[in-house]
Length: 185
Image 1 (cartoon, rainbow, N blue to C red):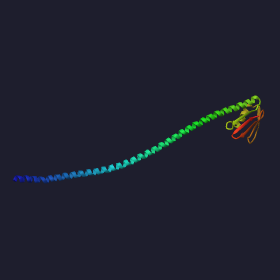
Image 2: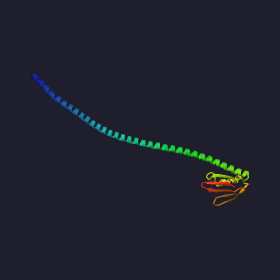
Image 3: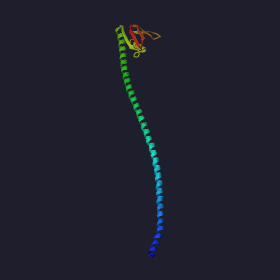
Image 4: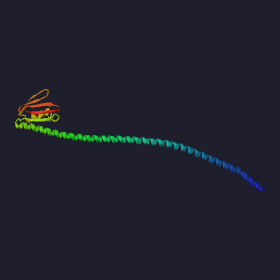
């Protein structure tokens, strides 16, 4: 029995030590758990911050996508306008080229008719010329250049309604509407 008491005494002496060690281990585990809880709380806060930042970034991305779509629409509109203007410019250039060819033909025709008049000795030849195509100063220049010995500039009125060239012919320049009628008499 003594042995049994000794064993129990030894066991009893060991128990407070074990209890003390267990309490110490428990405190260590509590501290570790507390540290982990603190880390977890920090991680949760960081996750919430990241989530907030992600939401902000997503909204910014959506805003940038809308801006990009608007910019692309504006670019498409500008490109279409440029194409339209280029087509219009090309059409107008074709019209200008066509009108220049017509102008050259009319100038050539006017010179040929005036030359024919002076070479045939003054027959009556009517000539109709658009005022934008052949102006008075050009006509007078052509008359002086083509027949310097046959005609002299006799009279040029201040109101510029007519010009008389003698002795071969009278050239009456009469403005009517948007045209200039040149009649060789």
